[in-house]
Length: 520
Image (tube, rainbow, N blue to C red; front, top):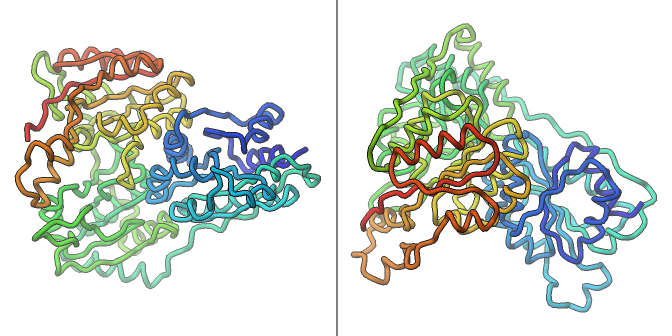
């Protein structure tokens, strides 16, 4: 058994069953081991950003890490943007990054780089294997690091000779993973007192939000009259009818400031203090009112369910019923132009039970979220780090994690072009993903931001930097060339028919949804 085989067996024994790959020469012994070691599902991505983004989407739905296989420092570098998103979302992931043989590094050949330095900014844990005998233990530690609450990015660097040399010890057992920390009792008391004081309060959930989080927060809110909210971009969120009701902090800071204007007690549960995504002239970065007291019930590494249960008990709330989203499906339009509101209503009316919505719709996704509040129960995963090109890969990984659930990916046309190769992987793996691609031929969010940061009047050159027409991208032809069935919708009737057909069938599908441009 060589090092690569022992590595694979260690990953499988630790529960890592999927590997998203884009290998090169240094990783060929790992690739060969995939044929000799049964059990690992290997999925090829044609760009490393697809690989890392797919591992992110997989982990959010599967609740456990996938592995990635990347080629040297440049290959890892190509995947860093979506590693940033995973890191910001506390997503568990194990990266296996090949490197030159240890004795070959001295020659400084063209692909030589400091792989650890490339990995460090986007990883919580980085280690370079030094011997085949120690490799299984290194792999076991990498998985344990990824599973550290609430989830971490772990990167194991694999020199080629460590991969191909004999490993006499065989696979290693994963060390124990510490449980999430328990919140101190005095913190529970402080939060209970703050919520019971009668001041307007908001319980803000962040990161991996579960149904139980919402239920418990809703019961606490029912006991004291508080509101329940979630971050602007939670890692995952149960949504739709029957879920305990919550509100989302708006993205636009003026709206967020108004949303939080009356809040005087803000209790954070796995969330950070609300702040505007960027700095804007004449606007505060802090979104909560200056008189608002911030209290942290649980940080991301804490056992938030335990903390919420204890807080509910302290407030005599365990038996209370939270406010819930009702089931109220919108009527389907029989005519009309496309808008984000119309698209949101159609999606809300037709979205099946337990669907997964992957949101990188940018300007298109904001309204769809609110309009699916009363749709059939489903789940959202969102763009946590702001680095675009995440949506299509994340939908790929989510579909592999949950093959029995429909995945709907809301995607902007500009964002799609960062990782359009993900469509090929969807087709190859025959994944049940419907991509709703908002095609307005613009970086619409940037046009809004251009105005909001106070940039001077938009001239021809500036306009050209924020417009992706001339030539227009034919997403139907592009998707079809990558093996994905695709159609184009110009109005609500066409979109309704095409989306209904996609929800009734299985397999990958793209709907190019022709949205009006902002006209800036």
